[in-house]
Figure 1 (cartoon, protein in one colour):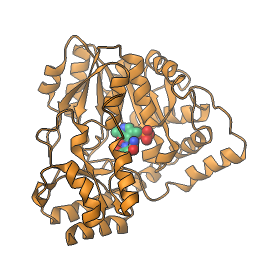
Figure 2 (cartoon, helix red, strand yellow):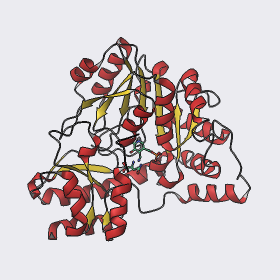
Figure 3 (spheres, protein in one colour):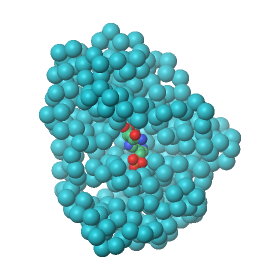
Figure 4 (cartoon, protein in one colour):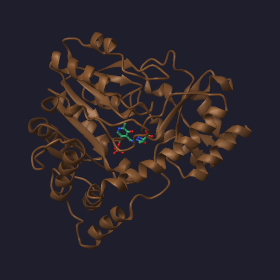
Length: 376
Ligand code: PMP
Ligand code: GLN
């Protein structure tokens, strides 16, 4: 793990704590999610669900995950063999890559890549092959993906809605990626943790729903994002039984099992009516609008934020030449923390001045951050 050091999220959150700055860096909400979700976990503790849960996760949660995939996307899953509960999406990603990659295999991922991808690929002894999404539209360049495929390519590691860009992959991009996966017989690991945090006319499409994909795709999600419980670390993956079994075998020796009582909470969340989940997104979209409007008024060029907690801005207009330096000094200069997007790249040439801001904070907090930036 030489070269990985401290994650950018830990570094920037520590900076926020040290300086008392508003943390628009690490993506976590500052309000609680649905009370039913919290109450179900509290009840589970009170009722004595405090020992190791079953290896694949409690039946109530696996059934709720299968039902969620059926109800939202028409995906049919056997909760006993095609679903695995994990310690957040982070463990689902690590377990999938460790299970499916052999040393020397190549993994194609959309760059900027969420930070744990490079680390998990390294743990598996595989090689990250990044394909750049270009600011500001961040659409997938299918020719570039095709050109990146070699006879060592094992899988496509996808992420939509995409962190850090906020891009939601459209049907045309997903169909193109699916065609490449089928043509080259690649596996797909699809990180869909922001599946419900999608704005305006955009729509989340799981790539597993496209022809030829269900049998080669592991789909990953996380209760942390949908229910504002990032500290609970309840994630999951689903897909064909043999791929899920491979990931389960690996998970046994990463954490064995995790988060017993919290699993009951997330099961209760997944059983909420769709309009309750939608209401959280409507609220988040209003926070996005506040931040996007404020950053635009500063004269910054922004990437369209179509989903997730994030918007990407080019801070060159503020005189910055290096986003890392910019983010390291921003708290002292104006009391705001953000994330330099360059850390999500193998080679940051061309993205040196891009910065990711999170808007998953109460409207008054977002407004205060905007006014601090404006005053500065
Ligand atoms: N994938 C992406 C794209 C994320 O943004 C995050 C987290 N914030 C994760 C995975 C990890 O999710 P979890 O906290 O459930 O481990
Ligand atoms: N996924 C969150 C983000 O992108 C952070 C999670 C973490 O700190 N590992 O901000």
